[in-house]
Length: 147
Image (tube, rainbow, N blue to C red; front, side, top):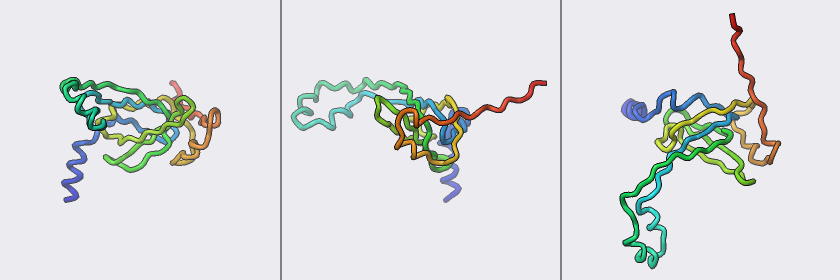
């Protein structure tokens, strides 16, 4: 049974090119697939509004677009197919965190913008900080000596 689960999960996993080696403290750019349209918006309306909107919905217009979310990775949980990334950014003075499974179909691509030098696996202390206090020291890249 365990082997069947492993085989099924191996089929769902993305390639190494799609998911780079992300570490806590990295600033990443996440490309997220967003699906819009359909009749999902009618279900949340009151009964009177649903009746009024019944003939007005468009069933065949589903729009798929990519939205970019850039922020700092504050935690990585799990391994394999169940691995999750939590990314935090400040938008209009308010902290916004998003958590996604790395092998999800919603996550189109992950780009590493810059790497930071951190000494912890979970950077939850960044939640309490504002402005310049949230900056992390950039990790220097080791260059190979040219011959």
